[in-house]
Length: 283
Image 1 (cartoon, rainbow, N blue to C red):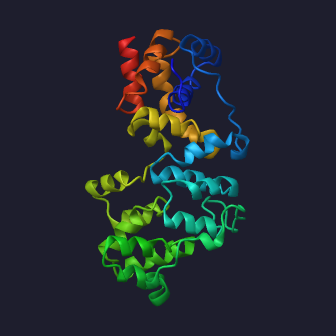
Image 2 (image 1 turned 45 degrees about the horizontal axis):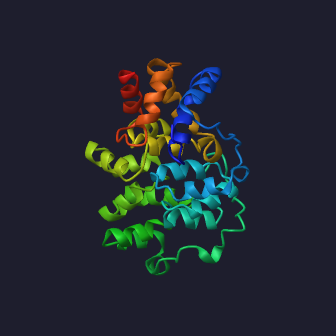
Image 3 (image 1 turned 30 degrees about the horizontal axis):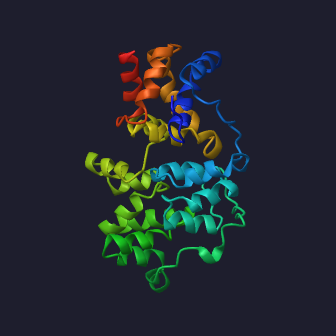
């Protein structure tokens, strides 16, 4: 196997779902390098791996899973990430917690400076949060206003305001595609199948299991998941649990099947489920 920064960790993620002895044997058979450690603290990994992670476009929910760890060291890499938006960067700079159990503000990594926080929108200064959301007459202005919804109290205020008098469509959409939008509020905005499909297309996922089984290409998704124990350890098991039965049924300890998968993965356009089924069927 010709290893590169994508295929090596991607195949390795799947190999970690079978017996460790079989995985070591198969690694030698297909020429896969020995896996890196799975330490939970980001700064224990080589900086090039983290910079590569920060340059890899991902659905916004993936970044939310990292933010939910409420770890300033991890947050600084979300700050640098190509997929991070103004709302995330603003929250990181202000030490806003995302984990469900935490209420106290977070400390902020030295590399994240408050003066680098995205500019506060003019409409927010003039009209306040709810006024700015109601003044949004385009998707751009609505998203700018929505980036000021940070604290749990902000989401509660938005929920109550929309119940009293529905927010404009642009504001509802800008809030709905925030990965941290409370599920009850998103359902309040709309439950039609087309609406939920568009929200998912915008990068809001039900969880790591959805990402692991339904998104592609497989090499990209599995490469991102291979950083899970480092960047979002509390959620990565959901992806592993979703793929483990499939991997054990169709690949198991069969060297030929893994060799086929290693050959396919770099150019395969389908998702991880389709990749595993295809490799097993060919072998």
